[in-house]
Length: 255
Length: 201
Image (cartoon, rainbow over all chains, first blue to last red; front, side, top):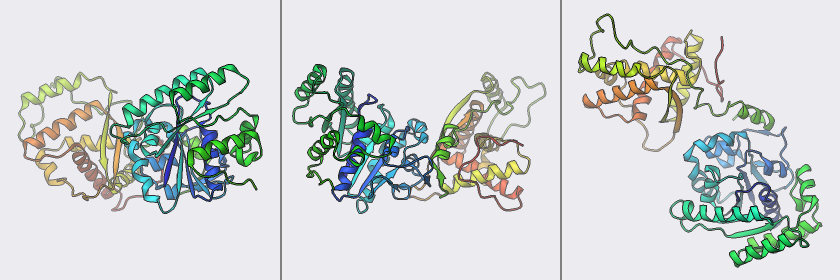
């Protein structure tokens, strides 16, 4: 089982879009995937097709505090057949006062190695206990970074956070594995400069960039990952290349 | 487990219905003993003398009513569910605790009011499984109650018992559950999955 955690302090960097597409990519490759939405806004939940009318017996917050197991709480994703999701709800807002959640996923997820091949965790845009919990559980840490200076600045903070708070004890040796430049405009100088800076700063850990596209917003409205909503779009192709690099899995054929 | 729509679940969470262990702070602390008793105080508990008792009471009265502290205690699922059921039973039978945290505070107060000998006889350190089956629950408890609990634990230690905070609180809650059951005809109701924030008559 491989646990992927997507994290960056800045909101709007493409964490959730990337997480949803990672779920779709892995599922299309025949893998059994559990998606965990740790953002109280529940956007990954929405991108995976779960709506307000969907009935749930337990949610991600219940799993973190030990009131339900991940297996009990996971519901099928309506838009990505084969994937299941731990729903992100407002309940998560209260968990930043519950330190026991920090090790919850790290210790609980390995119990389901027979049920799922991969786990994809989306985190809130904050370095609180929820993010700490996701970083403690992660085998692969991915930071989607919008090609803008303020997002680049936040990447350094995430890197430092992992080095100082996670790597020493919580998850020995934890590091930032991949940086995914998002919302990339090849014609804009600032985007090219940020990409260059990232490549210099994190050599060998920066994937090919994912361009900005309205399909990403439309896909959210339709409750789907981009690669499910518009599989032949340029941004879907970008994601396929990027995610193939991260996972080491060849790009699945588009039907 | 009961199924609810995501919409209902979020609405409940926004209304703070989810995080039931942390209840609203008590608006009024339980009545504290008078700072300067006019009448001679009741016979002090065994092992305590009147002077330290008066000093303690004077100190307690300095705490403004309404102040709360956070009490984090480990409870097994049986203890936690029993407490929730006891709270509802007591309310049904005319009890005054209208929030779960107030019921817990009343249980702690009642236990602190017992003598160390009574606590040892009625409570005793309850046997718990070696395996960790419960979780830490957090309650907002009036500061005066916390001080009484602390003083009672110290008194128990002087009497040769060494309960942890959690064990002592579990003892208090266990007795309160037993009393609630006795007052409810020997049974307790099945509590709902989520307790309401506040009970209203």
